[in-house]
Every structure is written in C-alpha cells, then in structure tokens.
Length: 305
Image (tube, rainbow, N blue to C red; front, side, top):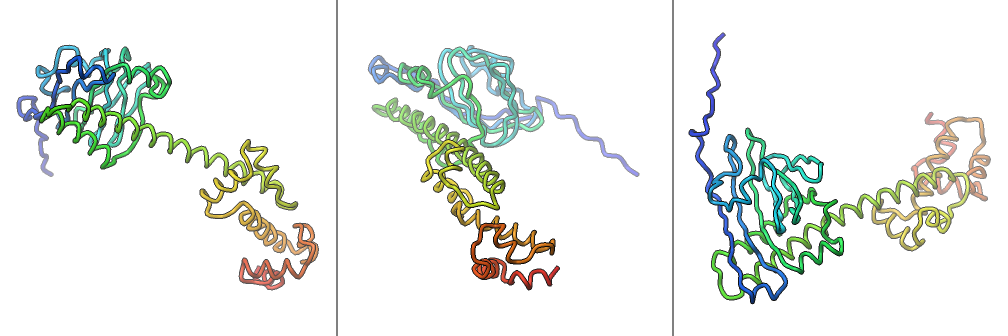
C-alpha cells in the first residue's frame, strides 16, 4: 500500500487576496446630516492566509481585529462565504454564511475566519449622532450584536451600492452611502424581528393546541383560549390560521375525530356513547361527520381493526 504525503502549505505559497477597501474623508457639510460613512469594503480571504489580509493597508486601530480591539464608531460585518468566530461581551459565536454582526462604539470584540477555511466578508463603517440615537433608543443594542440573517441579494446589493458611490465620490455621495447604511440596518433588524415573530407564533399555536387537547371532550372556547394565551380572539384566530392553515375550530374538530377513532378502537363503548362523550348531541350527525373526515363510517371503522 502506498502513502501520499500531504504537502505543507506555507504562508509564502498563498497569494494574498486583494481587498476592496476605502477609508473616506468627510466634510462639516456631510456631518450636518448627523451621519457619515467612514469606510467600506469587501475581501475574499482564502484558506491559510493570516487575518486580516493586507494589514498594512488599514489604519492602525483596525489591524488587531483577530486579537481584540475597541473602535470609536459603528460597523456592520456581513459574511457570505466560509466559517469563523466572532466574540463580544464575553460571548462567542460561530460565524457561517449569512452571519451579520454590529460593532458598536466601545464594544470590545474580535473576529476571524477559520485558518483552514477562510471566508468572504463585506463591511461598512459609519458614525454620527443619528446612529447614536438608534443606540440610545435601543434600536441598536449591545445585547443583540450578532444574528443569522441569511444570504440575501438585497443585502449584498446594498453593500455594492455603497461601494459604487464611494468609488466615484460624486457630489453628495455621503448622502447616498448613508442611505445604503440605513437600508442595511432596516433589512437586518426587520429580518431578525420577523424571525422572532415566527418563533412567537409557534409558542402561541403550541399552547393553544395543548389547551384544546386537554378539553377535547368538551366544546371549544375561543375567548377562553385566547385569554389564557394573552391575546385577542381575532388575533388568535389570525395567528393560528397563518401558522397551521386551519382555523382553531377546524383543528379542534380534527382532534375530536382522532379521539373518536381511539375510543372506537377500544370497543367497550357504543357509537352513541362515543358521540355523546365527544359533545355530539346527535349520534347520526356524528356518524356522518366521522365518515366525511375519515372516509369510513364509525361502524366500519371498528371492523377495520
């Protein structure tokens, strides 16, 4: 059996990636807006390249990103390929494609790709009283600096729009660049909020299902269920149907049919007794309803067992 030696990769053997990066001038006129874009760029970091690449092209305060640093302004970092780590506020996160993180003023942080994997990143830096207002109002928060927003063309397009404006530096490019920054912030925050809503919908629906299952032998009480969950009956109906594609009443009646099938399989209760136990006053209506939902009459269901 032959053996193949895996070649050792030396730093000198790996081509250093070309980063697109811009550190921007801004005027007093620009600052009147309450927001300025300070830097923007993107870079593909291949495996086995020291991070950050092209270190000497960055101002000194930006070079210690892999060891740990604190910045005076805001940044958004968006990873579209590869794998790495991000650490801030004593927490560590695994960075994957679609990860995004906010670097807030005074936030001690560090991040870097896995050396053997590399990554692709976009970043944009910004400052001004408008962004500090977002921080003061809790719209941006030190407790929510990392999220998995996912890979989205409109986020990449926003970064590329900022980069294009910065490349040309046409009149009022700062205004256009900051509009891109605000668009990015809105996109990230709304995607995170919508994820939270979906999770909240799931909690509401699971709680409602549990309450309905516990009362399957009775009658559905929508105001009682929505009251226990803490939302209005109309909102409960809307959320339940959005999440399950059924109204609460339709789901509840499905539960009754399942319970009826279980009771019929036990063979120690008559069809009439099963119907009455489940709240059907008319045995014949129950039989028609059961057949409509299962395709089989209650008497035939027993013969199938």
